[in-house]
Each structure stands twice: as C-alpha cells, then as structure tokens.
Length: 254
Ligand SMILES: NC(=O)c1ccc[n+]([C@@H]2O[C@H](COP(=O)([O-])OP(=O)(O)OC[C@H]3O[C@@H](n4cnc5c(N)ncnc54)[C@H](OP(=O)(O)O)[C@@H]3O)[C@@H](O)[C@H]2O)c1
Image: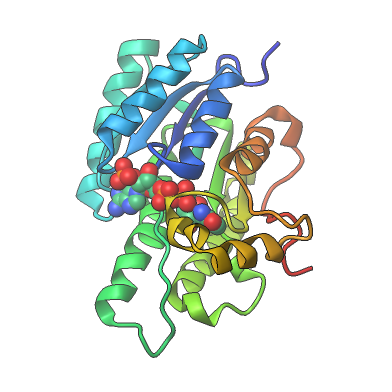
C-alpha cells in the first residue's frame, strides 16, 4: 500500500528543482498533487505529465505568490480544481517550497532586494498557510522549506538567511498552534542542492569543489535527497514529529 493513497497535496514552486522533486515523490506515494508554478507553466505541465505517465494523479495551478491577490488566485483555482476532482475543496498536505535565493551581504542589501526575498520567502508562506487553515483537513501536514544557512553564520546570504530564520520561527509557533487539530508543522533545512538556484556555483570548478566539500559525504545534494524526507514528513510515519527543523544537508558544517 502506498503511504499517501487518498491524500491531496499542494506543493508550491513545483515547476522546478526541489518542489518538482517533492511533487513527483508525493505522487509516487499515491497523493493527488497540485503542482503550483509561478511563471514556468510549461515546466509544471511537464511535471504533471511525468506523474500521469507513472500512473499518478496531478494538475498544474499557476499563481504569483508575493501578493495577497496572487494567493487569493491560488486558492480560487485550487478550490475549483479540487471540487471538480473530489467534490470538496479540502486537502491534506501543504508544502511551502516556492522561494528565491539571494547572494548579498548586509552592505550590498537594498530596500528592494530585502523586499524581494522577504515577499516570496516569508510573506508568501505565511499567507499561504493562513488561507490554507480552513481548507486543511485535521491530521494534515505543513512542510516548510527552510535552509541550513539558519544553523550557521551566513553573512554572504544575509537577508536570505534572515528570511529562512523567519520560516523556522513560523514553523515552531504554528506547530504549537495547530497541535489541537493534529496538524504537524515541520521545516526541512536543505544544504546545497543541484537546482537552478545554484546553477552558477555548480557550473564553476571552484564552486563545485566548495559545494561538495561542505557535506561530510563530499557531494552536493539532489532534489530527491530532500523529496524523500518530505515524503516521510507527509506520511503518517511522522505523526509524533512536529515543530522540528530537520537538517537535510548531508552533514554540512558538522
Ligand atoms: N537549492 C538549494 O540549494 C536550497 C537550499 C536550501 C533551501 N532551499 C529552498 O528550497 C526551495 C526551493 O528551492 P529550489 O532550489 O528548488 O528553487 P528553484 O529551482 O529556483 O525553484 C523555485 C520555485 O519557486 C517558484 N517561485 C519563485 N518565485 C515565485 C513567485 N514569486 N511566485 C510563485 N512561485 C515562485 C518557481 O516558480 P516558477 O519558475 O514557475 O516561477 C519555482 O518553481 C526554496 O524555498 C529555497 O530557498 C534551496
């Protein structure tokens, strides 16, 4: 029996990278997956196609997440898509994955760069969760993508690390808040993962050496390394785990 049969998941930013990996993995476990995208519609439709080719179920749903209007659009479209497929608009698993990286020190930070990263990395998950609350089924799951940069001093990605620190705090507070509904809230803290976010680093020989050398296993991570952990957190196997920040960095900075 697959571990997520009968469950419904929304994965934000699932058109590429880690979100794509999580969408594929949750679908492999039997979940019906809403594959959210921002701009990459074609890529999101390819993810849906790949899931369907493997016998799974999914649909793509586009919305810009940095404004409340955009998040309203997300749920209008999700409600409609779910009612068509299941007769109900509720769902079980929310994965807050959409986000951007930003390599800037405090000296290089501007108001615009601050707003850019905070809007998608903090404001978006906060209001995506807020509007998910009446739709999430009791016993459900919230999984937030944080980063290993909150565990060590990370001055070269200054505001980015602040944004993920906020995700950690949000995870802890909501785990307490939603316990009475048996909803678990956990964060995954990946290390360096092979996605477009790190394409410049991983194309450069020095960058590749640095990225691999951070992990005690002397390699960088792949989206599947993170997706397997997300699948565990989405399943009933993780029922006694909440409010946790789970390092998925291959032992970086040990
Ligand atoms: N890669 C890493 O090494 C790493 C490490 C630690 C944590 N993380 C975290 O893991 C998450 C995924 O990272 P990734 O490397 O997979 O990123 P990625 O490959 O760059 O993909 C980012 C995803 O987020 C979506 N997105 C970005 N801005 C958006 C917006 N304004 N509105 C709606 N969707 C938006 C993109 O959608 P469209 O392309 O459709 O617009 C895309 O699907 C992020 O939260 C990131 O901070 C990544």
